[in-house]
Image 1: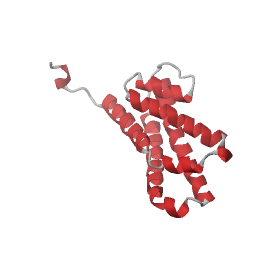
Image 2: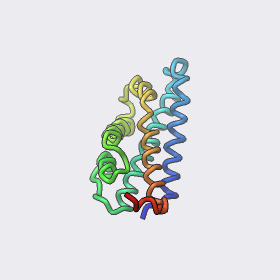
Image 3: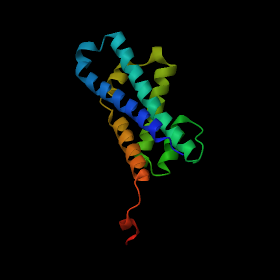
Image 4: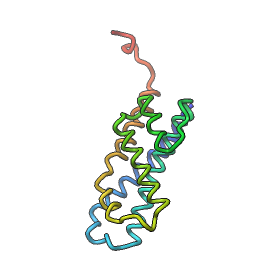
Length: 149
């Protein structure tokens, strides 16, 4: 059974981090050479994407869908059950790759790529929206109109 409270907390965290990243777009020209600032941006990306991964794994496990063998595969699993659209699931899988580079190759990450990613936050927002809509739909009581054709 999906723990809707847990999912809501995770989605709020993703949303908050996405909003903080969005706010930082205005600071790029002044701060792009500030290593502490760029490290903070990287951390926000890592934790936002990790929140999405946690949600995807939780939904797959709690609904007893196929067990994803990778973090990227978790998005395909939930897309297969109409939580996400397929195109977003593919882009979220790519986001996992970006997160992995940030975590495992931290010193070698191209800061220009990280800064460019500040203009690519729509997928995180769409993830929150699509999962929230799925949760809302499944918790909505059935309407008598649902049976009419």
